[in-house]
Length: 196
Ligand code: URA
Picture 1 (tube, protein in one colour):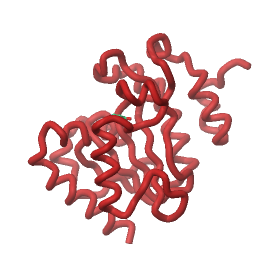
Picture 2 (picture 1 turned 135 degrees about the vertical axis):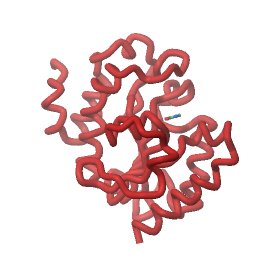
Picture 3 (picture 1 turned 90 degrees about the horizontal axis):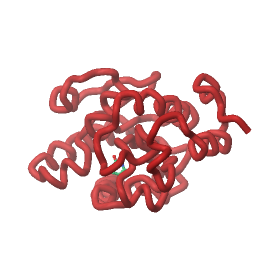
């Protein structure tokens, strides 16, 4: 079957959306990917985590945040009583702005983000989370349509399609810059406060 027009993505249910991502050829990343990375977790989770794009391990396994940054993310989530495997109130849905790996983990290109945005938008509409945690510059820029640095956006609430958004550092950045883990922890505390 032909892939859905970009505007039709907003009407797809979970199985059709999953299939549309798996079959997507809207940008050049489809040539180099091994697997698309749809997202994982509880589709009725209160929290949604949005990262940047699949890396090498994610591209191999077809699941988001399974490499070193993912181990840190899982530890951070566990500290908040959250678990990507939980299919109850402790659940979380984890997705990326891009569903395909950029070659050699280069930054997402603006046109790739534009092509992929309808998928994330539909995921948010289907999950209807109480809270989105945008991790890193690309998630923040894509969801909030701003180029303000994370340091100026964190610590307060933003909105994406009506859903409250908390901004924080990307776990891969935190692995390189552990001194900022304290700020990320404060951001997660704010998330827990909002979700109370
Ligand atoms: N970094 C991301 O932003 N997403 C992943 O899935 C893995 C690493």
